[in-house]
Structure formats: structure tokens, C-alpha cells
Amino acid sequence: MGVRFVERLGDAVLAGRSPACVGLDPRLDALPQGLAPGAPPPERIVAFYRETLPLLARHVPVVKPNIAFFEAFGAAGFAAYETTCRLARELGLLVVGDIKRGDIGSTAAAYAGLHLDLADAVTLQPYLGRDALEPFLLRCGEEGKAVFVLVATSNPGAAAIQDLRTPDGSVAEVVAGCVEAWGEGSCHAHGYASVGAVVGATRPDAIAALRRRMPHAWFLLPGVGAQGGRIDELEPAFDARGLGALVNQSRGVMQCFAPADADWRERIERAVLDFVDGLRRVSARPGGRS
Amino acid sequence: MGVRFVERLGDAVLAGRSPACVGLDPRLDALPQGLAPGAPPPERIVAFYRETLPLLARHVPVVKPNIAFFEAFGAAGFAAYETTCRLARELGLLVVGDIKRGDIGSTAAAYAGLHLDLADAVTLQPYLGRDALEPFLLRCGEEGKAVFVLVATSNPGAAAIQDLRTPDGSVAEVVAGCVEAWGEGSCHAHGYASVGAVVGATRPDAIAALRRRMPHAWFLLPGVGAQGGRIDELEPAFDARGLGALVNQSRGVMQCFAPADADWRERIERAVLDFVDGLRRVSARPGGRS
Image (cartoon, rainbow over all chains, first blue to last red):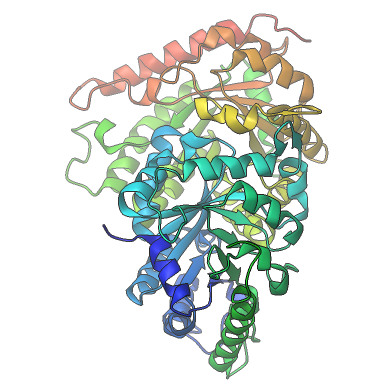
């Protein structure tokens, strides 16, 4: 059966791991200066993750490489993304490929073929409707791969589209209803489907309403830290077991040091521990639903 | 000033070229058998375009490589996309990178940096709002690069989101209003902005209403041929000069032969000629607006 993303994620959290995801957004000017200093950018990136992924694997169940920051270096950067995904999975980490792709028909199939081989789950765009997800949904059903559909994002400009009023609630709420429906034929575990939702952690006001529309979706919550989201406001995303929400932090962990700092490994480890401990305190409180 | 996409496109059409775009969606099972048969897939793809791009450059002003079909082959496929864009631009073709990316902040900047270096224009997702376009819009203003934002797509499932009613019209119509506004600070030529819209050719009923919301946007119209769109229904997309609409055909041209056909070059040339002639007849008729 292969992956069974939501089963492994739920098992990990029930076993006491923090529902934490660390985002991998490699930026050259935020890499340790002393690490492979003369190498080409994609090699420096891989060297950084080769050093840090074992540390992350000790503390968090999931990483989320954002392909944009790899792809920015062209084909060699794309290869670095592939290598990073492989290294992470070899360490037992679940990998959410933050690809935000969205296309239709045979194009969607082309994306699904590669990206669900590289990663256990991916993020997807909702604007083209179910067609854009179909080949991904097939693998959610057959292999327990997972997708996280953009529902309510953490940026200010999102409101122009996502907050539009329709007879059935906001556009984001309608998309939430689609996410719940799209998950029906997928693999379920611990009460959750393999089709989840990206919900910005900067919008705690929206979380409860979205949860009502998506009782069976894992929420992937980015935007904590640098973007202004606060962990202690995310309680309504979790159920009473501490399941249902996966919180992502990127810069706050992986860019918590200056490039010249010699003790960057220790700093990252401290930042990860702060993140997972803070999060465990919130997720372990009885949530709004059981 | 570099590219000035809409100026060059408008100039080409006013000089008598057909407002035609050929989509490059490489599929291994649709390549000529006799061309680089033993080579790895990305090399076979590049060999095919190395042979066909000069032919396309004689008849159409624009090509649209869809990165999904390249990326499906991993890093080497990504390199084939880069090479294909470069070959096309060296031949004087305008290149629309069909990337359908959409992300925010520094992630959007990472995408814009690479993809507007590789191509003259790209397609983008609207769901995250203006933030996702900002670094692209900057280069639309400074260099005359161009973007085509997904507004109304050609697939059946699109209706679930794009046709939702809001107090200001459908979601697609609201996005159309955003596209018009986003184009204001871009380079203009022949009355059109550097921010255009993707409008499925399968939805001719929607074209007139969308045109009213976007009087200054070039429409990129995919979905002719295999997807059911008919060229002779696209008249309302063009202005009286034959400007304002760029019609794309992919499979109908580049997969018009069987892999074993020895005369595939001639078949492609005939298919291109059919396409541009049919299109010129429609675009040259006085359109609904002047």
C-alpha cells in the first residue's frame, strides 16, 4: 500500500510527536557560510539539508520543501529538490512537496506522475476545479498519497478572491466544501481523509468556520512566525486528540542564524525545539471538538 | 527595454501574421519514431523541437511550452524546457511559458526570477490574489514582459469555482476585473496592457462578458481542437484590427501524425497552415468592438 500519509502522520502525533512541519525554502544568502562555500548553489543547498535533515527527523514528522526556491536555480536546482526529497524520505520524514501546481487533463497527470513519486504529499491550486486534482486524487485513493489544496492563504491580497461572498459563503468556504467532497474516495485514517487544506495561520478567525466545512481534512497551517501567525491562536484547528492540524514554520527555524554563525547547528536545534514544544502545548489542550 | 511582449505581438499581427500560438506539450508516445530513437527522453524532446521550431517560426509568432510535460522527466526534463525556450527565442519566436505558478512573497519572486528570464511571458494562477503576481508585474512594467492570468479555463470542473456567483458577477468576472486593474502599471502597446488573461476557447459564451471587464487585456485562448473549441466562435475576442486575442493549438498541430509516419514534418506544416489560415479568416473579420 505504500505511503498512507494521514495514517503515518496521525500515528506520529498520537505517539507524542509534535504536529510540526519544517519548511525548506533555501536561500543562498541564508546558508551557513562555512558549508561548501565554493560549490555551485544547488550543491550548497543539498549540503545544507544533508546536515540538517537528520536533526529535523529527530524532532518533527514532516518537512515541506518549497520547489520554487530550488527551481529558481534552473535544472540543477530542480535536481537539488529531487535529492532533498529523497534524503528526507530515507530518514523517515514525511515530505509535503510545496509545488502549488494546478493544471488539467493530461497536464495534471504529468505533474502527478513526477511529484507524487518524489514526495508523499503535495500542495495544489483549486482554481481549475476537480479536474486539476483528479490524477492526484487517484493516488490518494490507491496509495494513500495526500494533497493539501489551497483554501485560505496567509497573504493580504488573498482576500480579493478568497473572501468574495457567494450564496453559499465565501469562495474559501466553498472551496473548503469541495475539499471535503474530494476527500471522500481517498484513504482515511484516524477520521481524516487524504485530501487536506492549506489554511493560513495568520487567519485564526477563519479556522473554526473552515473546520465546520471540512471535518475530515488535515489543515496545513503556514504563516507562523515571520508572517505573523501565532501558534497559541491555532487551537481551534486541532481535535481533542491533537490531530487534524499540521503547523509549518520555515524561516523561524531554518533561517534562525546569521550566515557567519559557527554554531548554526545548535541554533537550528534550539529553534526546532522551541517550535515543537510551543506547538505541543497548544495541540495537547482539548480542542473545540472531539 | 528588452522584450515588450504585447508590442511585438501586436506588430506581428498588424503586419499580417496570424494571431496563432502553438502549444508544446511533449509526449514520448507522440514523437516521431525515427528521431533520436535511442536517446533519453529529454534529448528526444529537444531533438523534436530543434527540428520543428524553425518551421513554426515561419508561420506563427508565439509558442507556448507547457512545463508540466518537461518537468515530468525530472531535472533533465526541466533542462529540456530551458533549452526549448532558448531555441525558440533565438528564432525570434515569442515564448509564453505555460507554468501556471502561483505563490506569495519571496516565493513568487523566486519563480519570477527564473521564469521570466527563460520566457517572454508566463501563465499564472489568480487564487492568491495580487501578491502572487507582484514580482511578475514589476517586470511587466520595467521590461514589457507579460503574464496571462487564468480567468476562465476550458475544463468542465472549472465551473465549481469560476462560475460561483458573487455580488459583482461570477468569480471569473471578478478575476477579470482584477486582471484589468493589475495591467494598469504595465507596458502598453496598441491599446493593450502587458497583463492578459487565459480564457478557454471552449466557452465562447463567456468571451463577450469577459471582454467588457478586460478591455485592455490580450486573451490567450487554449482549447481549440482536441478540447472542442471552435475557431469560428472566437470572433468576439478580437478587436476590429484583429488584435487582442491569441489562439493556442497544441495537439492538433504537434501531434497530427502517427509516430511511424515518415512525412511528419510535412504533416505538421500542413496542420500549422490550416490553423493559421482558419484563424486569419476569423481575426480579420471586423470584430464586435473597434
